[in-house]
Length: 410
Image 1 (cartoon, one colour):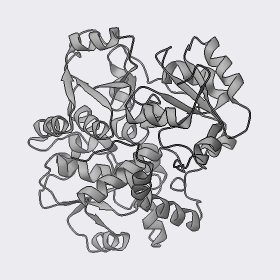
Image 2: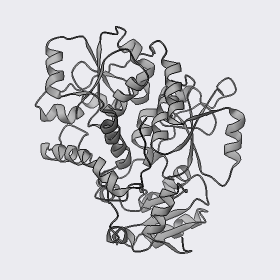
Image 3: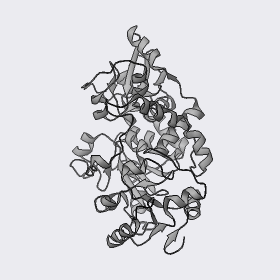
Image 4: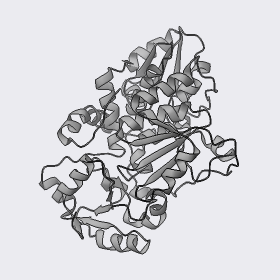
């Protein structure tokens, strides 16, 4: 890259060569969601002071800034340099230059995780049931267990009747208790598609003996099919892995290319100032608060896969995950590895001194600047829901056209 500016071709080369790069979109989230490069991360100009230290832990990481003609770049570059970041450039010509050379622009947020989920379903033919099929099973009192893999607050807002909250990476750890009868069919749902695809395929990959199906299109599909939702539910799945879950999860991680390390290797990674290192504790928030390894930020495993662009905006960085039960870290790492991340799982470390305290949470942006997800809340127009599903179904083809993703599916 040149000293003062980066071209779209420079960025594409860095992505293809898996060099570290933080491509930051300085617009508000609502504008970011209208279109951005696949691996761009949103860091609104007004939030740099709040977010930079946490999301960009290495001060000399290559950073490229862009907007879409709003004039945000110069002030943001000055601000980042004042914070100690020494390798900050602008994207020459901004987003319009990216479009002009014919590179793909992706809509929505968490776009590349969603595109990856669609690729998983296409490659593995992840089995699913329609909303009408699931509603018929509920009406017939069939031997089913519906596991909702969204965050608990999303579940409590609205859920499929009779479902239980088992967020993301908790599935393999809790499915044995949620469905102790191997003849029980497990139905995994989220709000749309991605988390239910990843959750369903996680249980299949880990060798759960039960039949597992995704609820196709999640609560969006359920709503569009005119079925009712429950509100205010508080049913949580208890810990109870099925036989062999821990060993199976580790095998899945190894097959994906995940490396297990100890404290000695972690120290070596931390001492390497030429690479960005993210450290995440993927357990639930209460476990984290009661005791966690120093320097590890809380990010529940399922949400980390969904929101990896928010958690780790430096594409090409290293990631280390910790989990005192290992299952959640192994399953989370297996997906991040398939998304092209250089990822490790830390073995042990919990037998020594631990830090205590709640997770660090960034202040939420002004609601006026936030992108309203078509899959959240209870007052979303049906046309917006359907348009969102149509967009998701087109992501595999858009990945093909873009050509920078480097994803693979085991």
